Length: 333
Image (cartoon, rainbow, N blue to C red; front, side):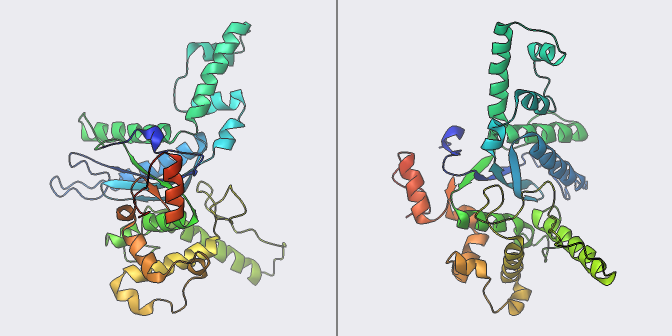
């Protein structure tokens, strides 16, 4: 039985969530439609562009994404503190990038002098919008409705484009965040749509690798021309949540180098013809988190089977279940 969304999103437990949505009625999100012969790869760009645009409006960051042929995966991080610290004018400016707003706020924006009762009502409206700016349901609504309308217009039809509301999993601890991000980034390889990370089109891992390669080339050019401008900061994709450390709550709690090393190691585990070239040394990030290789491989291949709406270690799952007045969650037994 489906649960109410408010029982699945608990920002006091975690700001990280894995969201998935799937097409219906053979409406290919992207890829080849064998029946019509049409190719819809261009719709991948629609989705990536919309996701990144929404991340600049909402106080919700993109940690990972993968756009598949008839569904997509997102790992989102909600930045509630950012939304709560926005001024009323900032909230209005952001909201008006997506929706028309209301007449009363239009009057306020035009500079009209309004009495105290009107200003009180405006504050109430703006506070409602502020809450929506860190609400995953509103983020997903703004994404799915936009894509559905655009696809239906292109297909010259009406009706449902998505099979239903999006599915979500709360990522309760660092091991859940890491394994879920890897599960998402390795989707094309598991589905045999790609045989390498750099060849995994429309994924966050491909974008991060390309950015890293570009940075390395620029650094090498500076060395060859004897340019010395001091310490160079590693540039990461601007519209993706940056990797940092467990000490910085505004970044993903791992370094980019550790994640790329683990991604390379994991992709070699999954691709049969590359297993012989798997690194003999286990990536240090697995050792730090005390995760065995066999357990890791099983998790990144079957993440959604391991967990239901909440993912994490047994202790994290039990703690969250008890806080929600449940005896247990799937994965804790």
